Structures are given as structure tokens and as C-alpha cells.
Length: 156
Image (cartoon, rainbow, N blue to C red):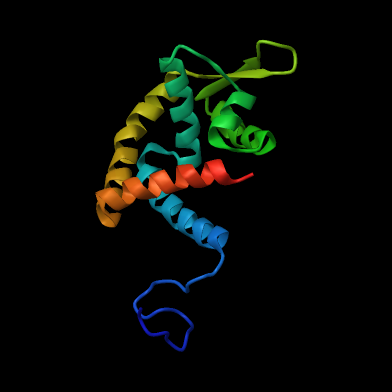
């Protein structure tokens, strides 16, 4: 184990260690999100927007539509936060929000323009994903995804 420096971090590490798993995960997620945001910038998207479009395109390919509640569940997001994030995508014409299957739900649909934006962004996302996997290591990246899925299932 590397010696501690006067700044309180392990020698050679970019950031101080933290005993809090949540803080370490959030810190890493913020840095990784910034990298994906940079990669997606030429398509005019941020990662959060790309994720929404990707999930809508995937659902469309599966032959099913999504309600706001369905999408929030897929993204593990609060409905209110998701609704706030959907407004700019609706304003740009990349998705439509309409009455859902019952009076209390709202259906979300990707538009042709939204599909074009998503398809243009897909290779940019793939490049960012490949760069991360290569930087971390293929096996390590696969193990990280496995651990994150397991952690997701263990959080109450």
C-alpha cells in the first residue's frame, strides 16, 4: 500500500480516499459522466439525455412503449426528476409526451428527429464506452458492471 502524503491521500492517487462507499461511487460517477458528456457533445447531447433516448429507442425496438413511470423505473430515477429532464427533449422535438394507457399515466415516444439524434450519438457513446473499458481493463470493466448490478439489487 502506498504511503500517505501530507495531503491525506495515497501517493500517486488523483483524489483522496474516502471511507464512504456512496461518496466514492458518486465521485466516480460524476467524473465518468463528464467524460461521456464530452464525447456526446458533437451530437448536442448530455449523457442523461442520451440515456433517455436510448431507453425509448430500445423499448420501441422491443415493440413496447413506455410511460413516464416505466422509464423512471428503468433509469432508477424519481418521476419528478425525470419529468423535469424530459421537458428540454420534448421542446427540441426529440420526443413526444401524450396521454397514456390510463388517465393518470403519460406515454413517451421518440420522434423521427429524436431517433436521428440518437443514431448520430450512438457511435460517440460507443467510443466513450470503449475508451473507458480499455482504460480500466476489459475484465475489470465487466466485473465493475457485475458489481454495480449486484449493488443495485442489494440497496433497499
